[in-house]
Image (cartoon, rainbow, N blue to C red):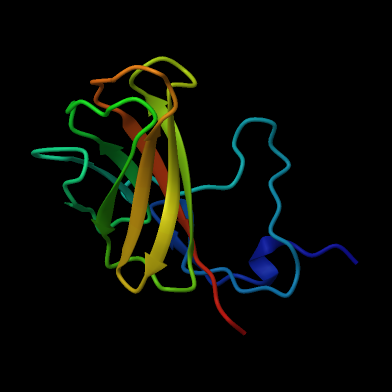
Length: 148
């Protein structure tokens, strides 16, 4: 028996649009679109820029967004970490990162090195044999997780 999303989700009609309040299902949530996928709606993201160095922490309390690092020099084969304060993050969440732009492809690596309640740490590595001075744009998304 095939069921529709409406069978699982409370839907509200607002000016002709269907708006889901939440999805809670024991089945999968799948997208059959070749281009739409599953993601966040406009308004759930944000952007922030580091102010003084690549080690400077930032604050952005959104479930998705872009962090622009400071263009300070990062020595060859060196790593630097900074904290992202984000009240949308729980200790059980998974943070996904990707480098949007800045520098040449393959010069930098960005990884999440710690997740806590309201924070996560990003470590940036210079993978080259020379010093780099780029403002890197790092995309992130929070995948909500639970222990049980």
